[in-house]
Image (cartoon, rainbow, N blue to C red; front, side, top):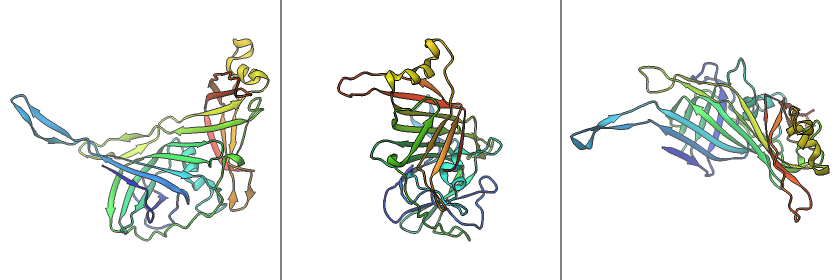
Length: 307
């Protein structure tokens, strides 16, 4: 079963958990963004029909583990300084940062127009993606593994309802990207995906996962690079000097903008030890310049306010 929400009057909020799978009883809820689209909550019970060799009809049902997935899209906003919307407390901040190899467990509350609430417990961010291109905003997509879902009639304890973030939205035109020795002529489009590879911990005798935990963190992305001087610099970084050396590894820094204003700060990601994995060059007379749609990977990621 999938619940998809695109209508006005609905609200998605979240708050960190102290104990995985157990909602906190007090605190201030947060919003992923003031512009959220395409929320999808999917539940599966992995049911199977039992058959017998002497009958074409099913003889009964057995059910496997219940699995829940939550996904949504949002537009990136600037962060605030000290409250629940500081960069470390945002969805993109939580997706990039892990403590002792584990992601922060969250409870999400999906409120419908009829004042009913779906409480998603033990949520771990599995995949977070940002992409942008000319004339577009910085758009984010999130996939989340959920331990359990509870239905409630508009009741979520003594939690304080979220407030609007209220900061500026960031766009392609305001973003900043740099890589030592590369990107000299500019970047026409950019994307990055952080995948935390969450794994469910099954519990014998139970129909639900006990918890979800992160595995290795994969960081990869794409960039449409406008090549300089025939692409010599970027080409040699991918192929190595004279085409037979080791690829160059340089950090990629991507900032959503250049605002350093308190409570309206742009966000900066640093992708450490990044290297090109593919650098195709296509020459088209009608383009007037050469663009390479590269793919890249990185070892680490950190996130902070722009400075």
